[in-house]
Amino acid sequence: MTDKTILVTGISGFIAKHCALDLLQHGYRVRGTVRSLKKADEVKAALRPHCDITRLEFVDADLLADAGWAKATEGVHGVQHLASPFILNEPKDPNELIRPAVEGTLRVLNAATASGVKRFVQTSSMAAVMYGHPKDRTKPFTEDDWTVLDGPGVTSYTRSKTLSERAARDFMAQNRPAMHYASINPGLVFGPLLDRDMGGSAEVIQMFLRGKYPGCPKLSFGVVDVRDVAKMHRLALETAEPSGGRYLGVSEAAWFLDMMRPIKARLGRQAKKVPSFELPNFMIRLVALVDPAARGILPDLGVALHIDNRRTRQTLGMDFIGVEESAPAMAQSLVELGLV
Ligand code: NDP
Image (cartoon, rainbow, N blue to C red; front, side, top):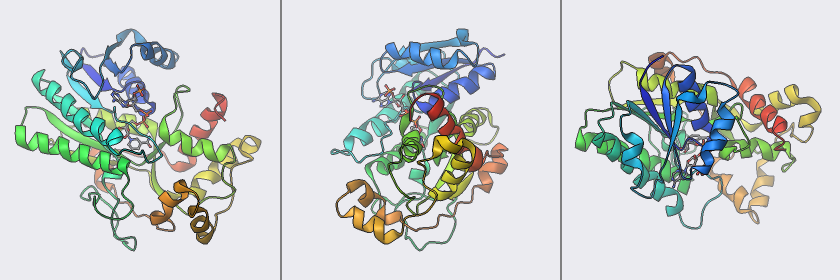
């Protein structure tokens, strides 16, 4: 047990609830930010079955306003900054994603610095690492790579994550606060949901469980289990490594079909609508003529992804849960929560 309080921004989110759970289970006090205090009861209800929630408190704060952030960071040892809009569809106005991501991150960094916070962990993404590169690239993506913002296939979400991580690193370089900084860059996050407030990545598996697609597009993603992402956030707060670390949260690069196979194997009849074959690329290209969602995936269609995060594994001592466990764990919880 420690008296250190960690601020978890956007604690109502899918990953942030797991971060809070992991911190509480490791003896920290947790303060979570919510946009509306009405959400506090939902978060408590999600965490109560798994841990002692008497060391959990809430502050209301929005990434788009200054109010609440001084109170949120007061007396806090560390911040895990997860709040950021995560939606699968392209918004009409990219600033719906970019403004809260970038301005919000700077707001939290400024408040944390003013409050004398010692450690700051930002939830970035593989979206800030591996987009906009030539599609015939075979060199694995590592902790050194950055998304090329004017390259092909860069969406507003990808842009929001790249710009917000850049903004944080620039802030640290320019202001040199006595605060340790690290980013966690997860791939597509699977694993169990703690409640029905499911977040963007579960929507991917939900669509397949509901039989929205007859087959899998030939798309490859770096994937990771949410329990590992939460652990990485805590390890990055505790690490003796120098400030500035960039840690890639990926167990492996997997094709959609590799994600669906273990779901079918574990869930049996409950996954009867989950496809067991790949759609030919030409079929997706035809669908893309009329479907903007299909159009969005064209740049990545058939592109084999290579990721080498050995540095992260060694530095943080991570041994990642594989997709054969993380994908069915998420599917199982979607079924149990009545979300299919
Ligand atoms: P969720 O959608 O579940 O959580 C997003 C959180 O951000 C919610 O708590 C939401 O609050 C909060 N939020 C959004 N806009 C604002 C705002 N203007 N002010 C304050 N809070 C806001 O997503 P995830 O848990 O999946 O994602 C959490 C983080 O992880 C994000 O930074 C995301 O980019 C990153 N990430 C996610 C991946 C994934 O596969 N899930 C992969 C890589 C990175 P509210 O509940 O009020 O809407």
